[in-house]
Image (cartoon, rainbow, N blue to C red; front, top):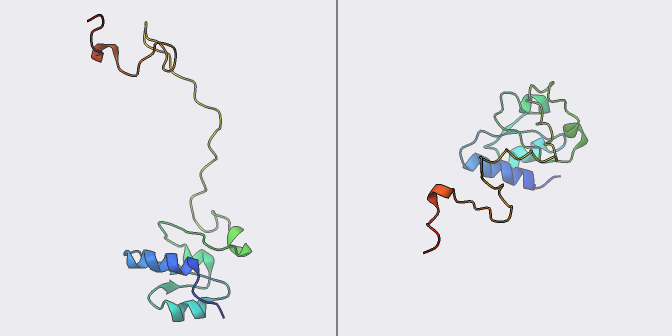
Length: 116
């Protein structure tokens, strides 16, 4: 028999905050229903994410990690970000690039006068 899990605690917290929460689990639905009858339960993981605004994958069950987002009508995960930094834009005429000796983050027009 399964007991209260961290995933169910997250589901309960989200429910308490006003979210509609649908839970699925390949082994523990009956016990989860007894522990948290106020949550919604379905046996099929694809049905659990239908029309969802947010999906939390809080288990290491293999059948959940192999679900195809297309099959579940979920947006594809974002592409990994490039580790190559963007090229800096060209400085304004006469300006020094940020980080160079003598460069200032304060625009020249806003700097106090010098030589006082």
